[in-house]
Structure formats: structure tokens, C-alpha cells
Length: 513
Ligand code: HXC
Image (cartoon, rainbow, N blue to C red; front, side):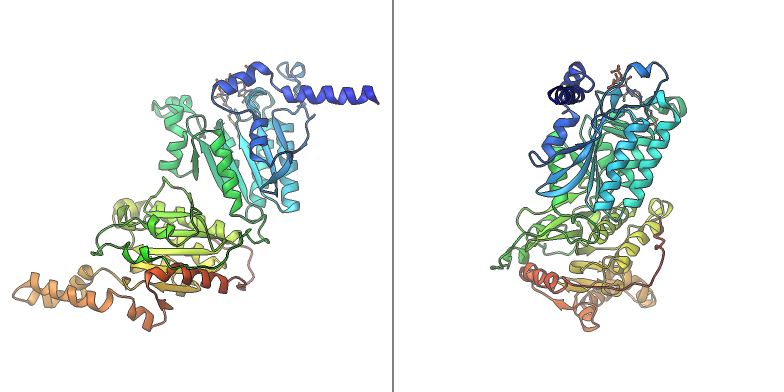
């Protein structure tokens, strides 16, 4: 027995060294943690249970039979985060650059299957040179096995991908199918084809960082939802993110206990500027509504004219979607619509109620927008809200104009409650544009067209730039003083907690992609 236990321990020690101390040192020199260190930091202490530690590749080409490393470049298993079960894989760059072999893929698939069958989130820590070049098509098949499982698990269990090193070629498509991507700044990148191929095909000179670094994907493409300064922060952000989610689509998000106190927030009565054309920071409204320091922003650097993120209100997890008047006056454009639609869909998949804070002058006009399909992309948001069956509450702080009013979780598309501040303006379009159209003849025939336009503008604004016509038609449930917003929302979300909506039977909807 002693000898057999010794053999076991020797094998374990061999697996722990993986690609060797020299390669581990190189990993640290790059400011990166090892694959194992990452797991230990992410999971609750002592909770990690490894599966497949002794798995090896089966390749016999290119001298690979002499290079067999226990674990084959990926550490897989399960453990807990804040006491809740998760499944995890962490690619080990010290073993063939973390590249994906047939057996490496099998290990990942095994824990994906377990995660799906047992209804718990899966977290992938990616640090890989892509398909194991020595294995050819077996490795490509392995990727496809993972993509397929990512798709089947979508909407059933939350899936989070951290990019903590290279991620090239087809390897980017597994993270892209998952719910959230977090990239580590300066040490990770994602692209389908790298700088060398780009140079050959398009003659563009571009660095890896510029082509597919964290800030590129955070600001230009929107591929990544979050950016972390280093590995530690990345793992911390994953823990944060998980804390807002349920374990699976049949579960409710965990909530923190809350004792109702004085929930009025007088500061909200003074956030809006005097003129309705002046900007203000919607973050201030959010922070005065949600529980202190509970707002966790997603896609912070992308389409800043709309803000999305998780928060808690009286301890309950919610998803916040808010127009941001500080950027492009909070207008809806292609990127803002895509960003918000994706977030709404995630929240609806996982029973996270939606809070919409609305101050939107409309859709952004122009050829650039039309040619980039603002029609299809705006429809994504309309579709995502209309489809959502979670509790849905809107607060109109100021502008709610045109189609954007409909899109931003209006009552006719299924919102449960619509509140408005007394400053709300709900109309088909702004007073000037509206007057120019409906009083066109009167203005043209008048002796002083400029004055006539002005007086018609005032007349239109007085009539529509308020919430009372909408309230009289039932489109607004209650006009509230801003200071009472938090209190009203706590009560509304409590009232909606057991909401059940039946939809007609279908295979799946056809969101305008
Ligand atoms: C096998 C690989 C490998 C790979 C790296 N290594 N990538 N082994 N298959 N794909 C090995 C290297 O041989 C080296 O081994 C070790 O990993 C570290 O690699 P280095 O190049 O020394 O490290 P670094 O300079 O940091 O560069 C990392 C890298 C580079 C940028 C990832 O290695 C690279 O460009 N690799 C190839 C990337 C690629 O083209 N992958 C295929 C993409 S196509 P030693 O023994 O020296 O330590 C693809 C298709 C998937 O993935 C399609 C799915 C649909």
C-alpha cells in the first residue's frame, strides 16, 4: 500500500510541475499567474476538486510520443465561489502553450457536461496558443465539441470566459458564445487572424495589442464586456459577476437580507439641470437608487450613450439599463442597441428583474447609422424587451421621444410598471421638429415665421413636454417625486417577485440578428 500511495503522490507531484519550473518562471515574468494559482485565487479556499489530472494526449506525430505531460495543458474540476458550486477549466500555457489537443478538449467537455447536468455556472480561464498544431483536425474537432456545448448550455447555465493570455484563431469562438468575456489588459488578446496574416492579406501593419488587445475589444468591437488591470483583478471581477447570478435558468439570483429604513433620496430632486437640453450624469441617478456601492457596470467603455450593469435594490439582484445624457445626449444608436439587447437577454435568461432609467431623445439619424442597420439593430432591443418575462420597471426621468420611447421598456411592449418624474417629456418628437411639421403652412404664411415657429414650439412643449398626457392614457402608472424613486422601486420589485408570464408554444424566437 505504502508503495502504491507513493506512486500516486509522485504522479501528482509530476502533474503539478506541468510544463516545468522554467516555463512557470517565464509566465510569472510576464506578470501572469499560473493556471493553478488562478484557480486557487478564484475558488473558496480548499474547495477545488480536480478531474482528469492524469490525462495525456494520444498524438504520436512530430515526436509528440516523447513529450507527454500529465494533465495535457488544462486543469479542470469544480469548487465553490462564495459557497456556491461552479465548474472551472484553466488552460496552462506552460504545456505546449496551453494549446488545445483532442484530450484537452475532452477534459473541458467533460466538465461542461457536468455543469449542464448539475445546473451550475462554468468559468473558463483561457490562455492558449489555439489548436495543437501537431494534432491537426483532431484538435479542430475538439474545438467544435466545445462550441456545440457552449451553445446547448446557453440560457441554461451562466458561462463566463476570462481571457488571460493569447486567444487566436477559432479559439475565440467559444468565449464569444458564452455570456461574458473579461480580458486582462496588456497580457491578453483575441483575434481570428493575427498581425502576420493581416499584413499578408490586407497589407495593414498592426500590433497584437492594437488588433485585439483588451482596450480594443472594450472600446471598438465590444467583444469584451469587462477589462481587468491584472490577473488578480480579473478573478475578483468574476467573483463579483457570479454574485448577481443564479446557478441556472430555473433558479433565482441570490439576494442579500435587507431591512427597510428611510429609503428616500433627496439628492435625486436636484440631479436634473434647469434646461432639458443640458446633460447630466445618469450614474448619479443610478447610485441614488440602488444599494450602496452595488452597481457593477458591464461594457463600460463601449457605446457609452447607454449604461448597463448589475445592481442590488433592497438586497435583490437587478439589471439596470439607462440612457446616458452625458454621451450623445443619450441617443440610441447601433452599438447602444446591440449592447443593451444582449444585456436584457442575459437578465431574462436568468430571472434577473430589469430596471430601465429613461432619458432618450430618439434614434441617432444619419447615413452611417442607416447603412449600419439601425433598423435591424434597434429592433434587437425592441425584441429583447418584448420577449423578456422577468419583472420590468421603467422610470422616465426626462425625455422619452419617438420610437425610442416604445423601445425603452414601455408599457405596451410588456413593462409591468412605468413611473415618470414630473420632468418627463413624452411625445412623438421634440417641440421644434414637431412644430415645423404640423404648423408648416401657418409658419410659411405668417408675417414673422421665426416668431410663429417659436410660439408654436412653446405651445407644443407646454402640451406634451410633461408626463400628464401619458399618465391620463395609462401609459404612465404614477408620476413620482424623484426623491421617492428608490422607495417606489423597492416596493414595485417586491410586488412583482412572483410574476409568471405564459408565452405561446414555439421552438425559439427569431431575434433580428
Ligand atoms: C502547439 C504550441 C502552439 C500550438 C504555442 N505552442 N502554440 N504548440 N500548438 N498552437 C508552444 C510553442 O511551441 C512553445 O513550446 C510554447 O507553446 C510557447 O510558445 P512561444 O511561441 O514560445 O510563446 P510566445 O512567444 O509567448 O507566443 C505565444 C503565441 C505563439 C503567440 C501563442 O506561440 C503562437 O503564435 N502560436 C501559434 C498560434 C496559432 O497559430 N495557433 C493556431 C490558431 S488556428 P516550447 O516547447 O518552446 O515551450 C486555430 C484553429 C482553431 O486555433 C479553429 C477552431 C474552429
